[in-house]
Image 1: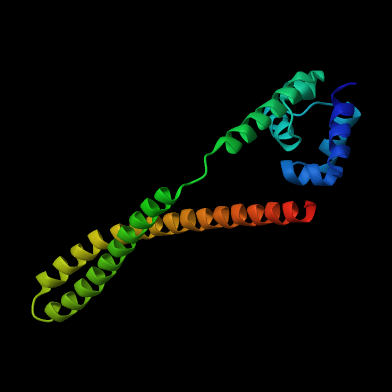
Image 2: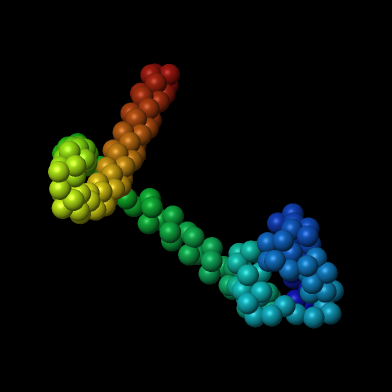
Length: 186
């Protein structure tokens, strides 16, 4: 099997048309047709994009070497094993997460108050002195990025707690299913 046949076979496996491939690679349909008919080969950059599109290596596209596909499957399996090994969180972990979450939440409220306070003070004192306007703007320039960063931390911790709660609920549901199955078997 030559390059063009392999390319056509991979395209058919993905249920893609020549137009689909062309649009993903930003080339013409005619170019894809020429590659499949063996009239020419794509350039090196496009070979890389083709390999990525079809989840194969450039070596497989050019030579048909199957070992590349196997290596990708092994890599995927190893990644899945790593995910399975993750230990479940304990109640102590959740308490630490909640403590950290509440500290971040408190910091966020402090920053919000500082922004409001600096804004009000700047407006009031800028009437009397232009230096107050500069000082207030400087204070806001310091406080706003800190608030944005703290808000990101807040969202991240909130997601972690939500994930933990979902895990606990799933574990409880699985335990309930096991208890029901045991009762049904008895």
